[in-house]
Image (cartoon, rainbow, N blue to C red):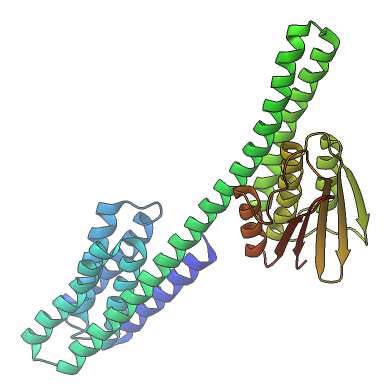
Length: 335
């Protein structure tokens, strides 16, 4: 049981105890109070994991009993708010609204039968609407958080697969060419590199999962391993430190994308990386010699655009530009 669920159960138990403490001696009221307690327990049981039919029935019973009990004990309006919160949190709008309104409807009927009380009805309806808005807001916030988590996971898997499979395709093409020449030693070396790329891709996937779990990213170590496998050079300035997950992963993906672009657009040209740890900021600079063809305009291509978006989400920024001497990418994150 989570702390939130425990607090919720204790609060609802206190509410039931408060209602019971009122001098309510009508037999029907005591029966309804017991039914409300059972409905609360049933909803808590059926909503995690959700059993839609049982949870719906529990909320209908809770709302109706709360509405009728309010005639004898005004504190029972809290049950109407509880029903509305539970409905808005558990079900989509088209289903939560009718469930939440069961309580006020029962209150109107009970109040009319016992002697009309307009203030009680208005108070119960207001509590219901307030609870419904709160429950719906909580559900929307939860759904937004889940959506962002899915988008983030999709982005990480895309980046890992794009880098690993792109490099693997290059190695396999080279292996195919070498196989035609019959150079078994070079073919064996290319196959060894291909296996290494697959292992590296699996490790990167594990690293991405760890980052999604909010574990700090040892960015200097990861970029050093990336550079070693790519035949580039790395110079580190300042004292290396682990970075927060989003910032560290954004900087690592920037290095990965920059090396991939250099290998794609300027094959054979040396790539140099400089990782600088400053107070409150970490900067990665990647430079490579000019390619044989024309230099791409700054920010051109989906790779650089995705890199820029990732860095901006982490609070950082990206500068990229080409010249006659080559191409430079500078990525910075506030960490």
